[in-house]
Length: 413
Ligand code: PLP
Image (cartoon, rainbow, N blue to C red; front, top):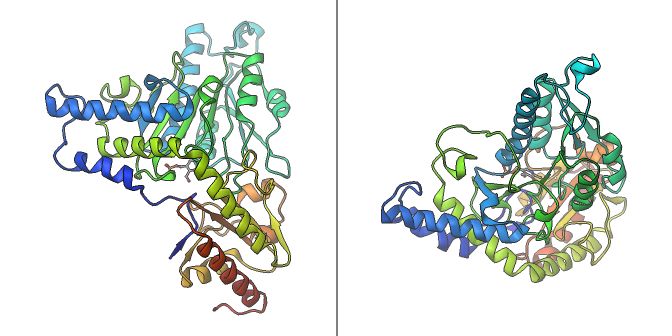
């Protein structure tokens, strides 16, 4: 099998598995209890908090473990809304709450239900949550990217309204791999209004590119363990010290009261170990993946009528994730190519894993201007440092044969 779908999930790193095993066996203490067995779990969770915090330049007490990227994204958006509502209520009239803003009541208008800014290319964990907030009366601006996949900083500033309480822009796109200018956006927003929270969904970027300056810029950041060789079902939300955020999950006082529920100690320990390994080997990993990415793309480029989705420059991983390739191949159905690739033992994806199976062309490809028939021929290959040149060459060869067959009306290799 040749696994080229690392944006969907990754194989578990040996270091993560080894770190987890004791906590799946004898070290089963509840991290919140007081005896020695529990203290081992507590220490292990604290150690993981430090390991994860290092990747984003945060303090350990600013990292809160969750069940994954989806929960972290939900918590960031819904929690920001809850905090905004509470602040507005305290102000006494449920109105816009920006510091120094005129209240809706005194201005004689309808009370505001708040406003958030996000982008049209976010993962569904953000988009569906934004839709939920809309159902509560919040207005949402969905910013469009340019044709290279980038969100423009001044567009974000232009979208700010009196009652804006949150800006959420992803760090790297899960389909086309483009890296957004998130720190620049956060600084620009804070320069205009420091009461607006800036969140970034860094699920695809955490452990793949350098984020160690991020905690200096953003207020909230989501990451997920299974995208960097950790176990599934674990993630984190970075909450900058002092930021007020409502809880998403109510119950006990775990995670300093920010996220209730008995800690998933083995998952957290594995996430921490995978983060530490990714941090230590990041330069080598980025270079290895980028070299493989460029090699595969050069070979795919030989096929006629191939469009690369999102900005791409050989050797560069400042604008695009080092392991991401997204292309539209004219005259083929991406879904048919995926089935044929699978028969040849190659795992890839068309659009994001969470939407494959859905026939609709990807919202991301549409947002960067791909026509429906172009978007239907999309394929995504996401590589890891575990892939080899031989695998890349084999995948390119098989893909080329598949494209020939599909263009000639054949659905079998
Ligand atoms: N955000 C992005 C950008 C993602 O790519 C994903 C998963 O693919 C998620 C959020 C959801 O993360 P999880 O699978 O940990 O819930």
